[in-house]
Image 1: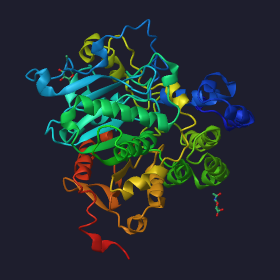
Image 2: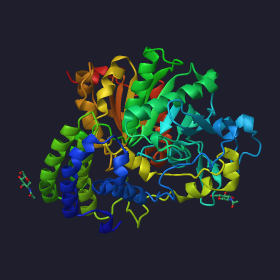
Image 3: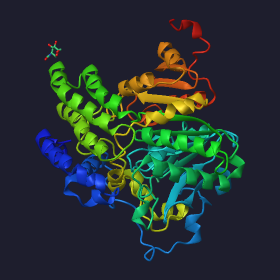
Image 4: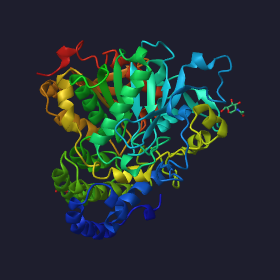
Length: 509
Ligand SMILES: *[C@@H]1O[C@H](CO)[C@@H](O)[C@H](O)[C@H]1NC(C)=O
Ligand SMILES: *[C@@H]1O[C@H](CO)[C@@H](O)[C@H](O)[C@H]1NC(C)=O
């Protein structure tokens, strides 16, 4: 990764100055449309493209937009179908036996949005919980997780599929959804359907879920869990709160929400951005003198994030631009480390290479099996990212205590070698969160999390709240530690994570 990928501080300051001088204009303007045209906002777009390029996921199209006239919608594309991927070693299994579904639901409260999803019935039992997975970005497809992390199969180098022994469909009926609209195979003909806030994102997800359970009433009484990674640290609390609210107000079908799990998420930026330099110093990515010279940036960032708070809006864009100076500086100093896994080098532009997924999903035989017609696959959409720029620095922790008080479980887990959403920042916000069990959670001991008799991480918990640090893993825990992540999910859903009740006497007074 060359230094050309990162803006020098000087350019940033100039942009920032320009940006702040346009904030007043921004405040008067209605949401996203301005972000496309104002030259002061080119930076977030470049930042989005930079992050996406670093993931080797730069899409041909920036967003999935399809004009109605150029795309005739057949009924078959709107509803779900059962399918069988070609090239998978399942010659004996019939389409029905596999229980694999893909399809679109039209979102009720949009002009024209269709949300794409995969649904894999459990390989164990249909009474297993229903789990929904959300990949972050914002704007990255959940198929990244499906094919490289916890899906039923992995893509091999020759574009065939191999069963994943540790797919989350071993213990759950799992849904992967492409969202917000414009991501993956999800699309709309109307730009108004591009989302800018967690409120709109979670309303769409709620409508999606209602459509899903209407189509699959036999799963509506199963336990339901919301899971995901990275920027889903924003989506998940908002979506869970939306589901909980819908249940309380009896808005639609009751959804049996039991818990939410966030892996290497961004949830409380004020605390998590402050943790960047601490993590980087601990892991020797930067020196003490780098650390000292970054203090001023950290304090500027803290002030900017405070202005942003939990509400969103232009001050959050300013915070985003100020605070990313810290991250960019660390990455620059650390000289081409993969910031999703600091054990690795980021070779060229390819920290990770997900091109097999794109090639696979563009095969005619695969598209026919899925019924997606000629809709392009957008692995990570810079337009969706950019549209969410006022949301990026918001504090999404604020909705969580109410969920905990109602007994909904929260698991925060983090692979220890991820810089971008590192475990220190996650641990700190979880400890700082105010709720009735805070004191007992803080006082609880860290205990070993072992799988097959080997230490796989360390965990602590109290009541519905659990924190787990996963060893030998980066940002994508299920990719790096597939078996451990499956065990984590299983035990957590069964209420066996962590074992603090059993060893409660170990807790210091
Ligand atoms: C694809 O690769 C896998 C191993 O990665 C191998 O078992 C399989 O035979 C290959 N398939 C084809 C069609 O070459
Ligand atoms: C960093 O700052 C601390 C506290 O101000 C100081 O004690 C230390 O000597 C500084 N270290 C370097 C290498 O600048």
